[in-house]
Length: 443
Image (cartoon, rainbow, N blue to C red; front, side, top):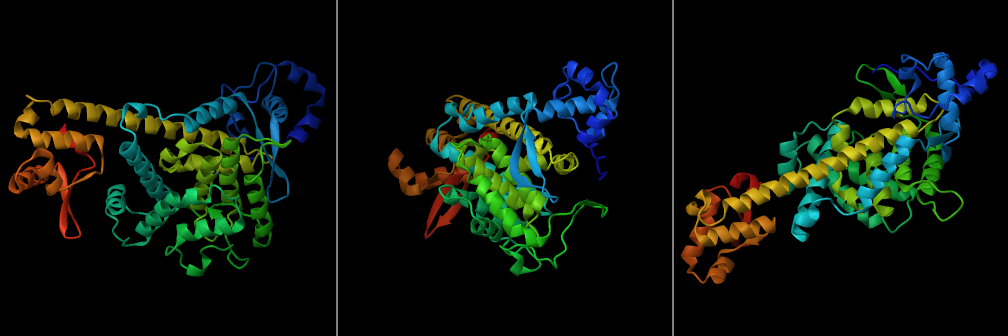
């Protein structure tokens, strides 16, 4: 990856163009360019406003940003505080994310609540577990990973172990919501995420040591980031925990979504562990969002969006590091990711609603499909559409329809033969469960 050209220090520009400051300020230059939080690396190729050169334009942008910035109690490797700018675009995105992450799941009210919402939650947890692990090297295919998580079988290799660990950790996050974040909790989360996946098993749940030379490189070996020395990590992680636990009722307030994203950013920046930093950073982001009351975050998979454009994820870190500690680049990027993840959930629900509606239409009396099934099988499938994951037994089906055992068994086995249900063993008894893609199969 090509490293971005560092932004020229704004104080140097201020001194160099001191005579033009009044003119620059009179132009009404804003913190963004056409709604984009531009970095110098790209802006230097754009055409500046008439009468200004690109340096003067950049100085005007930096002055606008400084008037809107808030410092974070988190420092870069030189000891300088990171900051975030409340630009119009970032404020607009924060409003949209907060509205959708704390409100109702759009479209879900048209679906049965309990089992259906649990199905969506499981889908999201599986998606996040798979893609977060794939971002860090898990080579397991999505379909194999889904089959493994649904069946509960033991992982067979390193990649599958990463995914299972991530899935378990995501399900466990609620356990820590009522507690303040501590280094020990961060270590426990890291230990859960990396169990059985590290070359040195002892590295799980502890800081990297001074002799473990960790740098962030791209696939060509280019050094992208050098994290702070290992000796600073205890103090830095404690500062991050203090920030995560900060009471918003005091004099200092920062939007809770910005706080969650900043926690994500700092774990990636500090790289406190030998491996698993990205997974830990994203897990702590979810912890922070859920703790702040954004309960719908459980249904969003940010890693599935990051996986589609990993270079942009990396570049957001690099932009923040190469422009005077301005973490707004990372915040803006993550807000965009969140909004895309939210859109993805809404699109998924819309598809499921449409499939369910079409499946119910196909099961109406007189339809082609209904003529291939008896009324008992049709009633069972309609019930299964409303109650995903529900288990049916021959005995219950027999009593429900007041039929003999052989008829009840024939009904259920017929649905298995039609590949609409599967037969599992529960103790000595057989149970029948509709396939997860029942609506699609009926279509």
